[in-house]
Amino acid sequence: MKEYWSSLASLLGVLAFCQTLLQTIFPPELRFAAVKLFNQLFRCFSSYVYFDITEIDGVNTNELYNAVQLYLSSSVSISGNRLSLTRALNSSAITFGLSNNDCILDSFNGVTVQWEHIVTQRQAQGYLWRPLPEEKRGFTLRIRKKDKPLILDSYLDFVMDRAEEIRRKNQERLLYTNSRGGSLDSRGHPWESVPFKHPSTFDTLAMDPLKKQQIMEDLRDFANGQRFYQQTGRAWKRGYLLYGPPGTGKSSMIAAMANFLGYDIYDLELTEVHNNSELRKLLMKTTSKSIIVIEDIDCSINLTDRKKKNPVSGTRSYYDLPDFRCGGGNGGGYGSISGDDGGGNSITLSGLLNFTDGLWSCCGSERIFVFTTNHIEKLDSALLRSGRMDMHIFMSYCSFPALKILLKNYLNYEEDELDSIVLNEIKDVIDKAKMTPADVSELLIKNRRCKNRAMAELLETFKSKAEKNEKNGGGLRKKEMGLEEEEEQEKRTLDSPKEGSEFEEEDCSKETEEEEEEDDDKKNNNFIQ
Image (cartoon, rainbow, N blue to C red; front, top):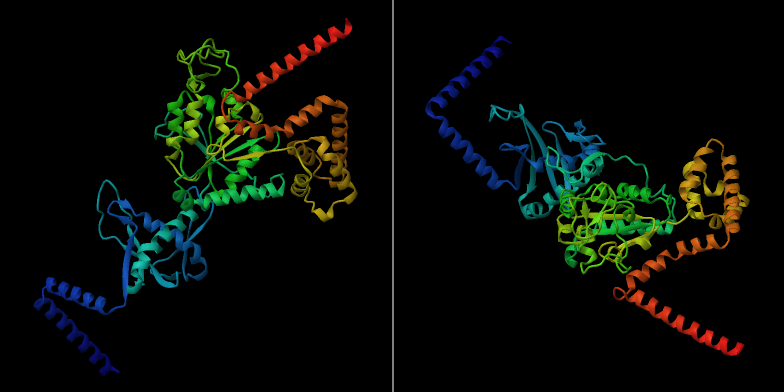
């Protein structure tokens, strides 16, 4: 045994002597050149090519590194051997990552690639004004040489897009407001934000299922239609008009749209905007994948139909006339629409139209404009045409299919668990009752602890509302006809060939009616004589 250890010690001594001799004979430059030559020979005979993606490129963060880390987190949890768990700021999910020197295989269009995460200690700090992390992290991508064009042209773009989807899904959605009007904060942003955590979805929305399906398909086509909009030369945006009586779920519809697409919401308060320039500035500061909302647009500013007779004399178009709100103009009331704003806050219909459909509306992509109103007949036809409001959604009173959704949401009732007799009685009176989903929801919330009492009181309320509406007679029927004819009135507004034609026809009809009345009077006078 001693001879064995003596031989090993002699061998180590010979190796140490040879190493010292090589370092003396061959300088470091020659050794470095030899290693470099060996690596080049190895690469020439190797069938693979390697790409290094470092975390920090110079002094800037490498976005591709973060994208690869997010992309691999979608599959690492299944095939990785050693995982690291992280949760980014403003993220609602925990992401997985590769540990040091761990590898993972990925496939793309039938091509297999290998990712390796390499972590080494940094030798020295580069800049005193920006300390670098102690560890130097990066990914190494190994692919076959023959697959190099495919990977560089398509795979890395796919990784970036996929990472953006994961980031959007994990990131908390935000609700923005322009509480300061159009003024900028210290960071140069005119919007203030809070986390958006509205629980409304299309599953919980009390609405006709067929109509909901149509809206969801339209939203899905819009979100996946980047290539379509580019081919047709249209801006990647879409407008929705939600109209109907109060309490029919217009705000819940907006929240459901945001949760369905994963978009942020910009709640634009027009009464806080001073002029068209600030309105344009707010638009420029919105991000892609967002929903820009103007609620109760008919109550924010004066956007009545321009075809109605304007009491103000002058030749200026309504597009150019400023609209004054409380707090600006003369004595805090409504100012005179004369063109001299007197320092008051004003925005014009022209500015709002350019906001939704002008050149500046194309400064971003994948954005949705949503307007809500309780009185669509008060809006100018220029706001209703396609290109500004592409899809008009009528939010009606609570229907029988919508009631079944509410019963499932609030009372956990399935359709086969409900009493058929009670359902048939409700079905006969629900259309006559004219109750909004908000009224029905409040009644169900009050009695959610006792399902039988909730159904009994719901049926009684529907019957009493229906009887009350029938007793009101003609006045209620006129209101019902007005609500039912809102869509037809909207179509007539959009289909009018030119401004003033509708009123010219009314004037002509009035003249013919007056002539007929005069003829009847003459006949009656002749008959009396």
